[in-house]
Amino acid sequence: MSVLLCALLVLPGCSESDRPLEPPVRFEGSIFGTFYQVTVMDSLTQGESLELEEGFKAELESVDQAMSTYRGDSELIAFNEAPLEEWQPLSNELIEVLAISQSVAEASHGAFDITVGDLVNLWSFGPGARPEEVPADEVLVEELSLVGFDAVDVDTQAMQARRTRNVFVDLSGVAKGHATDRVAAYLDQQGIEHYLVNLGGDLIARGVRDEDEQTPWRIGIEVPEDGQQRAQHIIPLESMSVATSGDYRHYFEVDGQRFSHTIDPRTGRPVTHQVASASVFHPSNAWADAWATALLVVGEQEAMQMAIENDLKVLLLVRDGEQWRSVASPEFVNYFGASLVDELGIEQLPTPPLPASNPPATMPAEQPVTGE
Ligand code: ADP
Ligand code: MG
Image 1 (cartoon, rainbow, N blue to C red):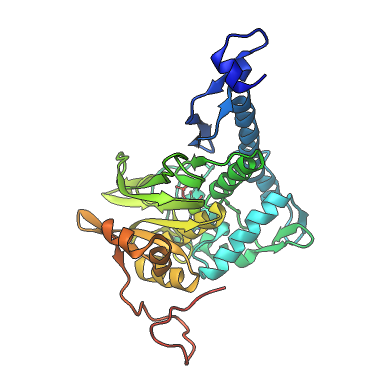
Image 2 (image 1 turned 180 degrees about the vertical axis):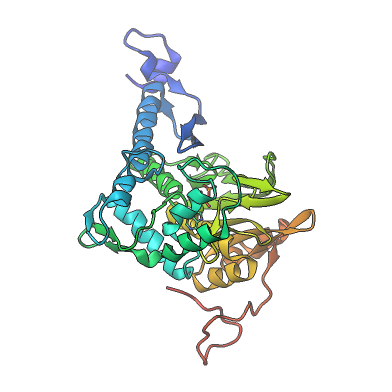
């Protein structure tokens, strides 16, 4: 029965499930302790929309089952409890996320580090219930002595991994991005052409918001203040994803000092510099998510240096007294265009940018260093 006929006529055989829905079709719910919102602009019937929702929820559930540190039966918890040194065969998805994590760990010189799990717990941001207080120095020093991404080996050929020290592997800084990728891949497989996935602020846009007008999807980069849900910048997004890490949502305060859930693996303490949020635009949201966490750890100068070395499209919101300023990496400016960047009042790095950490002697001064 054609959708159109069912829409126009009340015919026997036209069930509720054939009823066409007026786009946008929105799906909302919660997962991983956060929300999801999927918006589809394609024409769907009621039945198709229910099927789609069931399908992408199964993807979210499978990521939770593999990577949650909050459910005792997850694959990650079993990995964390397995004997040291012994290789563990793991699912494709866990291996993929571990491999991405280790790449970003290496490229960020350990700023992103999935072995911080016990520190995250210690600071009360993990599954282990702890009071919101500053841990004693001795305890931090002891925990810190184990932390380091070299404590996890990943063999992508044999699809196995192992821990070589007793660290608690925490994938919360990258799993949400991976889940966003998975929902998008599922929608692609189902032939959906125009959609926006928002999983707790990690987003992927595909196609356009309005096909007739060719209006792109537009996403907001939040004002970095708790309790505020205003956009500081509105940015058009076309077949691209973005992840943001910020210090303004998950934190506690002691004596007016803010302790956020992003831990600097070099000190064992929550980050303290002026970068309030780091947004990374990348075709894969898992990479964007991991990088956003890494860049929030290192602070403005090093973040921009890493953005240049790794060709990352980055937007930082940096606190400046009661206000903040926005700074874009060169690749962000290349991708979105200097005129949009100007229009949004975003600073660009001066050219030549900050000195590269290891510039080849022959490199022209104005040429940015590129990573792999
Ligand atoms: P959000 O969940 O707000 O999007 P992130 O993607 O930045 O935030 O992930 C933060 C989580 O990542 C923390 O709750 C913690 O579990 C974990 N984490 C904290 N510091 C690091 C780090 N330096 N490297 C990797 N993961 C981290
Ligand atoms: Mg992250």
